[in-house]
Length: 104
Length: 104
Image (cartoon, rainbow over all chains, first blue to last red; front, side):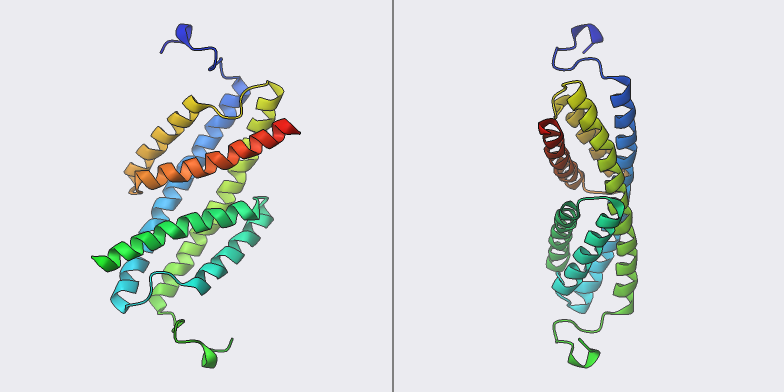
């Protein structure tokens, strides 16, 4: 699509919005790379747990993680409820991976 | 709870698991801090959008973000479907914030 035919719903992006989006994109790249690294580690945890016949989930560990991340969120100005939803979202995916490792 | 009364379900954590969890905790702290910074930027985006009467969501921007993050995920060994769920999860929260800024 050329600029000439851009629909009314997508007006010229103001310079300030463009600048902010550039920084958001940089942070998103960081998030993806850190998450990739985190899943490499949880993959190792999954293999270790399968080898030692430990359960895939560990409720007391999860509670510690949630409490710690809520505190870190508060300190850094992130909504602690969002931090908790976020870590639960990640943990759900990790447990799914662990179950798959155990099944194989 | 002392070590003596630890329940059977929480056995002594093997050293290797402890090491991996320490690294996961470090990455989680990074994730929380990067997310905090990301929300500071989207807060500015929300205020700018409210001032310019731009819509809270921008479907073409979101599609670009998803495509880019799926590529970055693939390059870094993260499941692209997970990266897409993750960015959708974050964008939903951001749009909720933008709606709130507009309402105020």
